[in-house]
Length: 239
Image 1 (cartoon, rainbow, N blue to C red):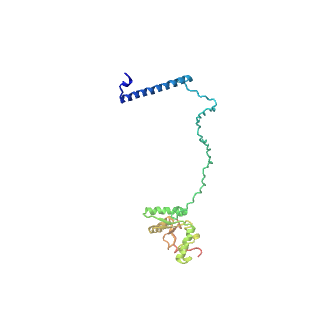
Image 2: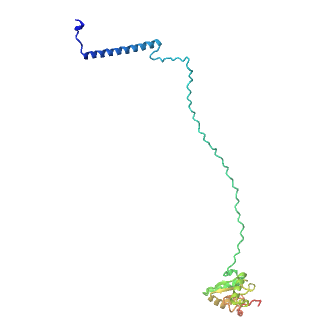
């Protein structure tokens, strides 16, 4: 049969045929390229595991990469202070403080103290006091030995009170004439003691001396001897 008489293919069949032909052509081209690449590599001596050699002719020399400098850890510079040895300060040895020798304090006897009186009056009074105590009477000394300063003060007060030196000395004598300053007189209390000693004092050599001072007693007689008559009042020797 002639070509004029061949049956015509349908459009769909033609399209499939063209697609197949295209795919085959692309595959053939790709295969050819791969074959050509292999042949070129073999011709240049390149294997699949060979690294291409790059010519360095005319290329600038490359310096070696700088060596990595690993910083050496430096010990931290801490200023270590050497402890200063402190020499202990030697304090001067203190000598024990010597207290100045204290002079014995002279005790000024109180006026009420019987021990400040003269030995004669003191011994006689002790016997009289013991006898009075046995009789139920207590004798108290109000004023015994006085200082000259106190005696003068009492005299000055008496002069102001009585208005004159003469009137004052009937009650208070000047220090140089006073039996109190000499420790030879006592003023006693209470009234019962005055009465008892006025009545019984002669037994022990003690007498009331002045009429105007029932409290004033002196050793002006011998023990067991009656007392001399009382004087109306004291009289200063200068009068």
